[in-house]
Every structure is written in structure tokens, then in C-alpha cells.
Image (cartoon, rainbow, N blue to C red; front, side, top):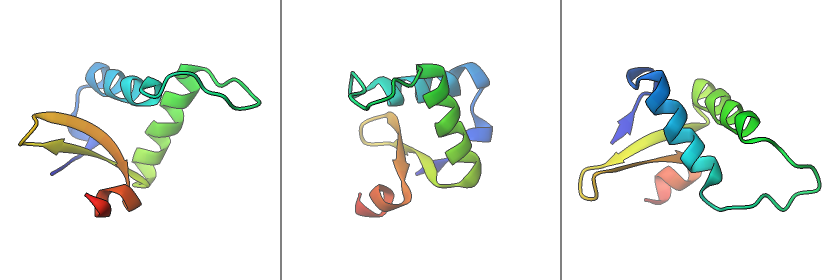
Length: 73
């Protein structure tokens, strides 16, 4: 089930995105990007509908998925 980011309280949305961007640990890129910048990038992607917040009733969890990963399950 897709949940609109506009239906989630700001603090909750920020925490969800922050957990998502820090989930895989260290960023091994050439340029270090702050967590706040990554959160803003995901927020922009949500606004453009490039990514979606999904809720699993079975597992009672939320996550963020791209258009490609949403179609894959």
C-alpha cells in the first residue's frame, strides 16, 4: 500500500527518511554527503514521485521504494 508523504507528520516523515538513508551504513563515495542533505534529496524525490512510501500490512512496516523496486515487490 502506498502512503502519501503529505499524510505523515513532519517529524515522523523525517525520521522515516533518516532511517532509510542511514540503513546501509557508511557512504563510500568520493564526496561525503551529510544525512540532512540525503534526507532533503529523498524528500525532493517524494515530491517528484520518483520514490514512494509503502506500508506492509503483513509486516507492519514502512519503507521507501523507487518506481522500479515498487513494481518488483
